[in-house]
Length: 109
Image 1: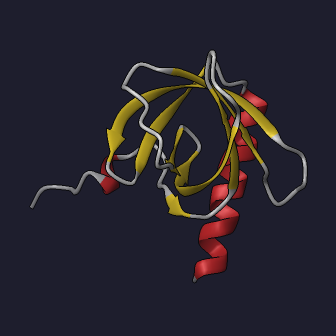
Image 2 (image 1 turned 90 degrees about the horizontal axis):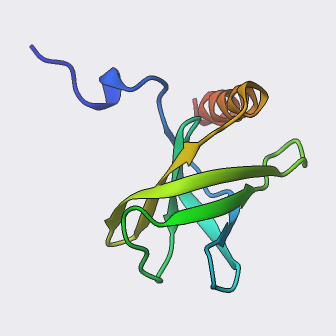
């Protein structure tokens, strides 16, 4: 029996509606919500289309009230919104994201 893709992830993602501000070059900052989150990426509910490879700066509002500012790149464009992968993330920010994802997962149980 083979493992599912979700079981092969470095860290599981959770379905979460967190506030996210998406900023891309030459465009107005957009306030949106996440669909799902992991410490390494995020899917954001957006009507606007972003092409894979588009660089974006994301600001996430976590429950600890300290926003995270993350550089990212669009990995793929799904019908309900783009999937961003985080790039050049500090170890501290990865740990904050892991803690936030784990806390959210625990609250769903």
